[in-house]
Image 1 (cartoon, rainbow, N blue to C red):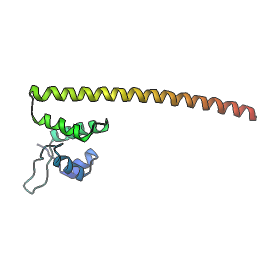
Image 2: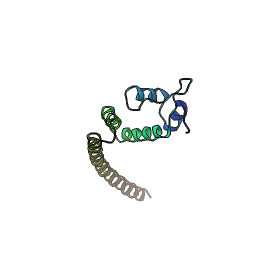
Image 3: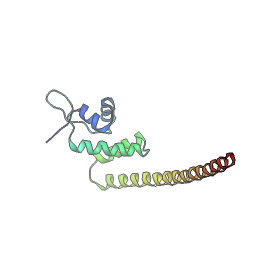
Image 4: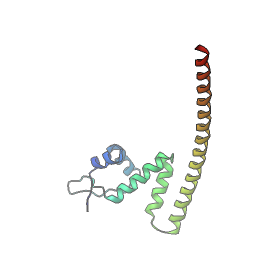
Length: 129
């Protein structure tokens, strides 16, 4: 099994080594197995989980909710764990969909303003000639 050092995971994930240690300390990442020399050795499963955490963070999920999700994940494949995880993701996805819709409305407004300024520029340019 191939494992990676914390510095390799930091490079691959874009997180600092301090952040990886912090995520482990606060329970976002399970305790990472260590080599005989005491260095953390991350597995492929750890990397997939870190990638998922980064996606949750990038979409605005807060640390407390991420911790709750991680705790439920550690509880295993039981209804008491799976149902609340699904519900959390559904709630987060709905919030994200609203944010995307709002951003799309804002983008349309910006495009409209840009078109207005392009028309103004064309009109002003033709008056100067």
